[in-house]
Length: 67
Image (cartoon, helix red, strand yellow):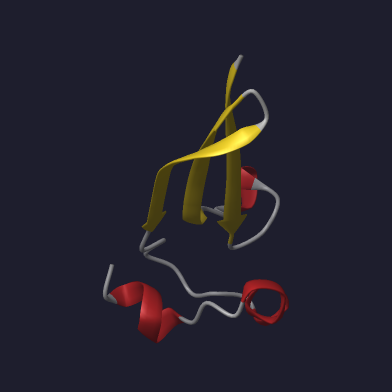
């Protein structure tokens, strides 16, 4: 069985308030074992990072502006 596990980090929880994804990662599992195939990207949200979100994932405006 092949599965893809996906995780994201965001600027907040409500897209209606303009929150956006800042990091996305995916990991392939084959028979529940990592296959070694991964995907990872940081995304510049083009908005300020709220302090509460930065406290969760540690991603700063300065760092994300480079991506």
